[in-house]
Amino acid sequence: MAHSVEGRVPYLDHHVVDYANRLPTAMKLKIKNGSLIEKYILKEAGRPFITDDVYKREKHPFLAPPTLLNPKSKIYQYIYDNIHSRDMNQLDLLFDIPRLRQQLDDLHNDKELMNRKYLWGELALLEGKYLMICSYLTLARRFHVKYD
Image 1 (tube, helix red, strand yellow):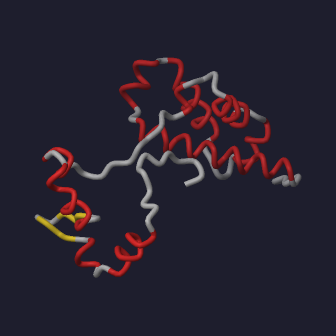
Image 2 (cartoon, rainbow, N blue to C red):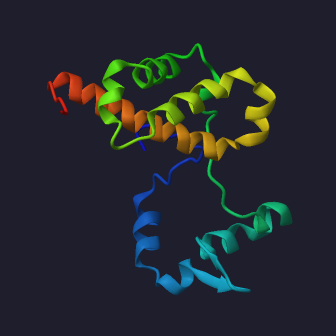
């Protein structure tokens, strides 16, 4: 959770948390119409105070805009510099380097294509892949790892 946004107010009353921890699982999880309903007892307790839309809404994650969308961001520059570095060439047995470079370059060559081709979730996964590779390259440089 170090890099996430928490949009809820946490339960600060330890008595409420202790009570909830003692409740049987069947009161916290229910299966209705083939769907798993989490926090069932909490939703039922709040039912009189919320609208039908909120009550029936499915759980969904909050996704921050991927930094790949902003070519001026420091993270994008970090990714771009690493993916286009000579050190990246050492990883040619693990990755299709020309494809990775082209994919990154294509993101900003045609905005309309990018908006149609990628959803934010896909961009977040792509960004994660690039950051993993960049982290590896940074560590390899730091500890003088070379591949022959």
